[in-house]
Length: 125
Image 1: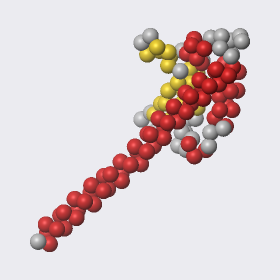
Image 2 (image 1 turned 180 degrees about the horizontal axis):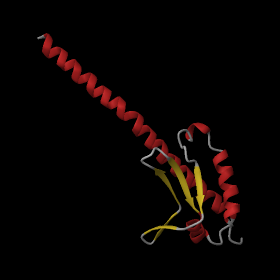
Image 3 (image 1 turned 60 degrees about the vertical axis):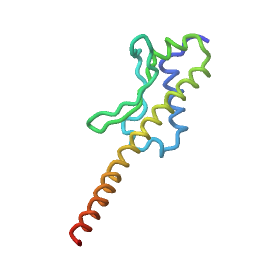
Image 4 (image 1 turned 90 degrees about the vertical axis):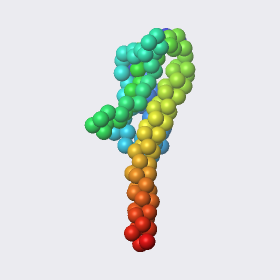
């Protein structure tokens, strides 16, 4: 197969995202984005990443150039598989982040409740 274009990959990515149950995309307020460039960390290409910004924005980025470099002449199905795995990994990071944020107040509340019981026991004698 000839190299997949950005537009062809965008169509595949749109279908992958449409197939994801909405509950997994909850609070992924920036969605899933396709960027044309290549991203590297050292010598390795980064296919995709989950981004969480300080202003509360969170989104998944897929790097077309990185996929193109790695998958070059692979058939469309190989591209679809790799993008699906990359999106799933981004969603996994998103859900882990949500879980960490929702657990923290409960943990703090639990610590506070436990310490307030000890204080009540001390003052009751």
